[in-house]
Structure formats: structure tokens, C-alpha cells
Length: 229
Image 1 (tube, rainbow, N blue to C red):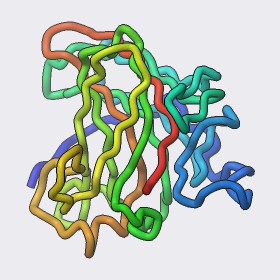
Image 2 (cartoon, rainbow, N blue to C red; image 1 turned 90 degrees about the horizontal axis):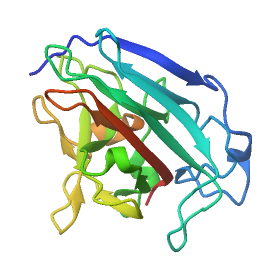
Image 3 (cartoon, helix red, strand yellow; image 1 turned 90 degrees about the vertical axis):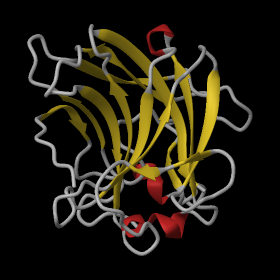
Image 4 (cartoon, helix red, strand yellow; image 1 turned 120 degrees about the vertical axis):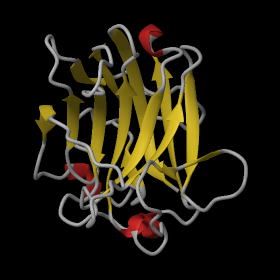
């Protein structure tokens, strides 16, 4: 079991308690978290949050921007995307700073993502700005409640590192997948059954940026076309 004492400072909680008005459209796939084409600040299940974690002086910063420069990949949605950019302060411990962009799915009890994912995977597109090339980022499925009864944190993560300034598509398979490619893994804590327990309690999809060990770092990452498949 691993516990954390985190101070989460909310910088942007926009659209809390509201639902994207286009989410009821018959043309919108129910497995789509957001393609950001409408440029509003809610996803198709609820809000968007931009959060940093540290108590440093000066603190880390995160800015959330809806941009019209979306994915240019085949099948992508080129007219809208979500960009996060800012400064991560040095990792001096015990702060372990990070910044995250969160897409909540169901704040009350979590969402059964198996019902949305016949192929048991999450797909998204990303483009790094110069500051994020070579910098580790995480995509995370966060379980509700946090922490679990007993104190373990239900985070399932995959780390990816942009290598250039181009758009890329990444598919991350759910735990239990044994083929090639990226697979979400439980970050820490006592092993918990994904299919029977955790998959039915997913609270959010988050994109997280971590600081370097010695010096502050800028970061700049654009996300698009987040969907369960």
C-alpha cells in the first residue's frame, strides 16, 4: 500500500455540473470522451479540470486552452483540440510536482468503461510543442473512490514520451491485454481485479506531466479525439 499527502490546487474547473449540449446528439458516438470540435470547456460526460500539485514558491503553472489546431491525422478532427502548457517546478521531494488535464466521466460513482469499450482500449491523439518533446507524460484512468477502501490509490497508467512535433495517435489497451502495444497498468497498491472491480468505477481520463529532478521545465501538449473503443 502506498499513501500520498497531496495538495491539489484547482486552477480551472469549468462547466462543473453541466453537460456538453451536443452530447445528446444522435450523431455523437457514445464512446467519445471528446473531440473538442465545439471548443467548449466541458467534455461529453461533464467538466474539464486543470490541476497542479505542489506547495512550492513559485508554484507550478498550468494553462488550459481550446485551440482550433486539431489533429491532422487520417480520421482526425482538425478544427479543435485541448492544449495544456505551463511550467513544472523542480522535483525536490516530498512534493513530487505534477500538472494534469482531467476529463471527468462520472463524479459520483465512476463509470463502467467496459460498456463503452468492446475492444477494451482507449485511443487519443497528441501533438507536442517544443517544450514537451522528450518529456515523459502519462495518460491515466482514475478509479472512484480515491483512495480505495483500505488506502490504495486506483490509478491505471501508461507513460508516453513525444519524440517530435507531429501529430500521433496512441491506443492504450485495458489491463489484461497480452498482445503488442501499450497497456494500462495499476500504478501501485495491492493488486485489484480490473474486470470485476476497477473497470466499473473509472472516474476520469487524465493527461499528466511530471517535472524533472533538478530544474523547472516548460511543457506544451495538445490532446485530441479521446475515445473508448
